[in-house]
Amino acid sequence: MSETDPELINVAPGQPHDSMLTETLSYVIGLGLALVLTGVSFWVASTSVLWGPGVATGLVVLAIAQMGVHLVFFLHITSGPDNTNNVLALAFGVLIVFLVMVGTIWIMAHMNANMGPSPELMNLQMQR
Amino acid sequence: MTAATEAPAVGLTHQGSEDTGLGQRGPESKSIVVPYGFWLFVLSDMVLFSALFASYATLSHATDGGPVTNQLFHRDLVAIETMALLVSSFVCGLAMITAKRANMMWTQAWLLATALLGLVFLSIELYEFASMIGEGAGPQRSAFLSAFFTLVGCHGAHVTCGLLWIGTMMAQIWAKGFQPHIMRRLLCLSVFWHALDIIWVAIFTIVYLIGTLP
Image (spheres, rainbow over the protein chains, first blue to last red):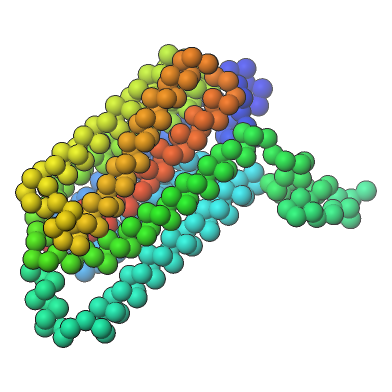
């Protein structure tokens, strides 16, 4: 717990410096949550109980939640003052990733719809 | 004297202010700066992957009459891969905890376990690739398969690099001990390895689960 833990060597100010037990516990909690989210993802994808059209959205939400778990419990991204730079860099990265993915999918879907051959022909080509 | 009155901001430096995390005590120590720089690299790597994801999402229906996702992907194999990589990421964290306490034996053991689990993941992936190519579903078959092999193969290449890096770090720790610069490299390695697991979460969700929905 204390910063004068004699076991520790070379701990940077930004890193969590707790006892071995609490540090391990953080990873165990992260692993547990990640296992649950992964299990739910595979279940959601294979069950027929849920409303079909909503499944894909649900899977994306589960994936984003699991990425959050990894960031917090494995990469130790926190909201502490010594982590501001890391969080800002992450926010910028997420912005770029969002723009690239959503922008591409959006534009390419519209180009497919507006500039391709007639819809019947597209269906024949694409859904075989 | 109050901190606010004499806080001449020079760039991001706020001298005399309370802790803002912006380095008012001059440059931060290397143990802060090096992981931050590596974090920027990892984020730019994720931007690279986002472009591959975008092209995969665009091309995933352009199968050119060839095999489609439902015929190619096996969810049970993907589940094993996912478990292997997730536990590998967890074990890598345990290695960091023991390394911080300069415990040579356990650090080497956990790093070895990390590498072995990564090897399990990579073997399954290579087996999947080989069987797909054997069925005539190689990357030159259709735009969908080109995008698939580029995306998943790029992740696999990262895992391969990570395995080589783990081996290197095991040797360096063994030869040089837990010196500060070795610890910084080890920290970067753990950030890299955890980031690969985050990217795999996106891959198994988008490619393997959403791709094979009924």
